[in-house]
Length: 204
Image (spheres, rainbow, N blue to C red):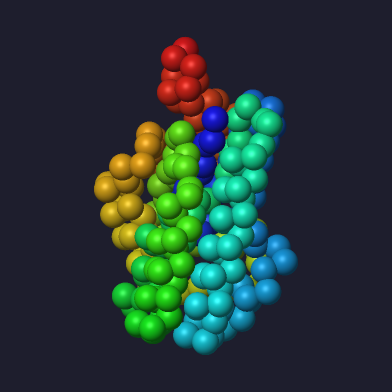
C-alpha cells in the first residue's frame, strides 16, 4: 500500500510522516529538502532558479516512485507527491510569472512523459492549514532559507492546494484540518488522526 501526505510548506507533513511510520511500522520516504542544491538559491532569486528547482524535485519524486514500485515493504508512507510538484508548485510559479512560458512548457513535457509510468497512491492525507498556522510552523523549525518565504507565496500555494484537493481523481483522499492541532506535542490530537486512518484503512 502506498500512502502519501500532502500539504503546504509548514503544514506538518514530515513530522506526521515520521510519526505514522513509527506508529504503524511503515517504510518512510521523505522529501529531498536536505542536500537540495537549489532550494536556498530559489528563495533568494525565484526567477533564476525556479526551473532548476522544479526539475530537481521532479527527478527526486520520480526516483521515489520507482523505489515504491520495487519495494518489498507492505506499506510505504511518502512525504509529498509528484502531483504537487506539477499541479501546485510549478503551476504557481508559471501563473505568477516567475517561471517563463518556455521553461514551464519544457517542464510539462517532461512531467507528462514521466506520469504515464506512475501509479497513484492508494490514499492521500491532506493537511489543511491556514496562513498563520503555516507561518508559525515555519518559524518554529527555523530553516534559514525559509525566512525568505512571503505570505503571498504561501497564500497562492494554499489556493492551488484547495483546487488540487477539490479536483483530485487519482484515488482516495482524506482531509485533516490541522489549524487547531499540535499532533507532535498533543497525544490526543495524534490519536484523532490514528482513529480516522484506522476507519479508512482497516474499517475499525
